[in-house]
Length: 346
Ligand code: PEP
Ligand code: MN
Image (cartoon, rainbow, N blue to C red; front, side, top):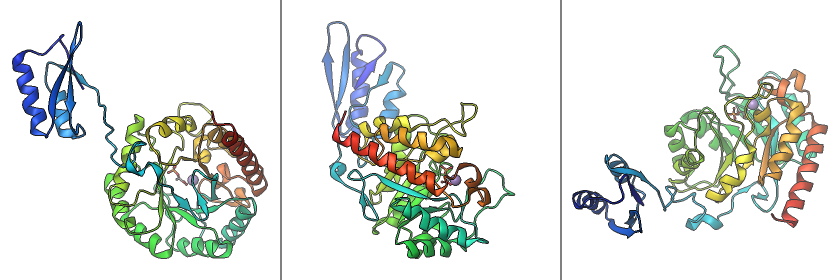
C-alpha cells in the first residue's frame, strides 16, 4: 500500500509509480477516500527492490506492507502446520528442555558425562555442550574440536540428542558428521548471513534442527525472523527461535531478558520458541524465575546451562549453570506451568 505525502498523486506521479510496479509484475489500484487517496499494489509486493524504488520517490510518504516478507516462516505460510521434533519431543506438544554445560572442558570429560547423566535424571530431553566457543576475549579458552567426541559420548551414554554451537563452515560439517541433532547459531552469529546460508545448505536433506539465538544487535522482530528464513530457504524449515537476552541495560543482569517477545514471535511466525534464560540474566540465582517467566509467555521450550559442579566449570558455567537439583526443580515447575497454560489457553 503506497501512502503519498500529499492527498493524492498527480497524473505524472501515478504514471511513474505504475511503471515501477508493472516492472515487477504488479498493478496499481487507487483507493479513493474522502480526504486522501492511497494506492494498493496488486500482486506479489514482496520484492525488496520494488519497495526500495517506491520508497525512494520524493512524493511517497511510506509503504505499508500487506504481505509478509517471510515466504516460509510466516504464520500464514503453507508450513504453518509443520512440526519440529527434537529427540522424542515434538515442539508444541510437550515442553522441550535442553540442558547441559556452557562449555565442555576437554581436560575434564568426566564432568560432562556426570552432567549429562544428571541433566537426564533432572528431566531434560536434550543435552547441550559447547565445543567451539565465541568468546569476547581472544585470550580465553576458545573451545576445542576434541570436545566433539566428549559431547557425542555424553549423548551415547544418556541416549539424549545433542545441541552445540557452530561458528564456521568446518564446524557445521564436523558436527553433522558426528551426529549432532541441533546446530546452535549463537547471538554473535545470528546476523552472519553467509553462515546462515551455509547451515541452510548443509542441513537441507537432513533430519536435524537449528536453534537460532537472537542477536544482541537485532532490532525489530522481523530481523530475527528473516535470519530464520535465510536457513529455511534452502529446504529444511526446522528452525527454532531462541530469545536469549538483548543489549544489557539493566544493572545486575548480564543481558536484558527478552522472553516477553515470545507472543510477538508467535503472532508472526509458526516457528517454535525456545528461550535461553541462562544468557538472559547471566546469574544462576535468577535463572529459574526467568525460565518460568518464559513458559508463562508461551515458550515451547527452554535451553538452560547446568553443571554438576558449576564452581569447577569453564566458560559461563561458574556463574550461570544450575546445579542438577535446582535444574530438576525448575523443570518440574516449568512443566507444571506449561500444562496449566495448555489446559487454560489465554
Ligand atoms: C552459549 O549458548 O553458550 C552462548 C555462547 O550463547 P549466546 O550465543 O546466546 O551468547
Ligand atoms: Mn554459555
